[in-house]
Length: 365
Ligand code: NAD
Image (tube, rainbow, N blue to C red):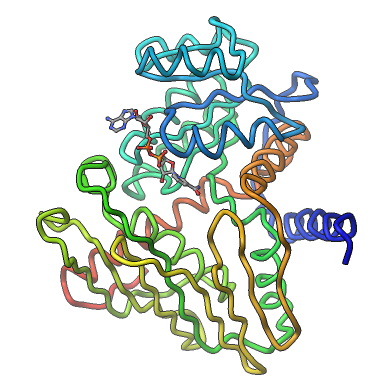
């Protein structure tokens, strides 16, 4: 298959999949008539620096218009590298003045999870549309507050689940949704990598650390999207660590859980900061869909009795695709493909898994 037709297929799949899974959710257009919406990144750490800013050089419906950082040296660096005018550079203290800046249409919160709620609510108060990184927040209550703030201010809220926008995910969901291999019988999913850091926010519970919040939401997404259903309960869960000097005070390095779905479908999930694991196996009546890796930035691939699932692209295509999809939805006053409610569903499950692990009992959802 030549490059052009493959690109065309990716595009059709992405748009087709997006149409299939839009949730009914009122939406608010940017109303500015701008061709490209201005995005301000809040938090210039790894994900903003290595993925989102480069992706915003490729996007067609949005561009990197501003930054919010607490580090003056980063502000200088980004200002020069991306030609960001001084008027579009904020710190955490003067952030709320962004309300008066017509260059910024969207605020993208890329901070440690414990800070998501505050910055989403402040951005909504400033009248900006909001994109927020996963995990959406620390608790279901925080997620609800964020959703409410965006509704109250009539602003869109999208969660940075890039996989909803990409073709491998869209394709396995299509096979499941259309029951091309019959009904799903069971599922097995794992997401993890070896994190050799000892003092990052991922190892700090108060800042949003713990593997279940971080990589665990990918495994939960794998189970939910791969079955096409919502779990009824957490049958069992267990957290553990092989590095107690790093993962202490109940912080999980590895978590396993069994989720029960309607029809007696069970999903075993595993997530870890202690090993490199990444696969999604969906067993259906007429064969299995095997994706590995299923959640990286590129190089995803899979197979089922229907054939190969393979749509090559390069980093940071996923992030550009996600931001263009979401910018286009805002421009056209359409619902977000991944609204706040989708982030909330996972946080509810995260909390239930932790509860099951600490009590040793099943937890109903
Ligand atoms: P990071 O540690 O590299 O960056 C975090 C940024 O927040 C830094 O710039 C840091 O200076 C800033 N910050 C402000 N206040 C802070 C505080 N009190 N403590 C620590 N940092 C503070 O983290 P990251 O990997 O860029 O992750 C940021 C967010 O992006 C997280 O929610 C993470 O889950 C998400 N993320 C998503 C993906 C994805 O594929 N969607 C990938 C990586 C990260």
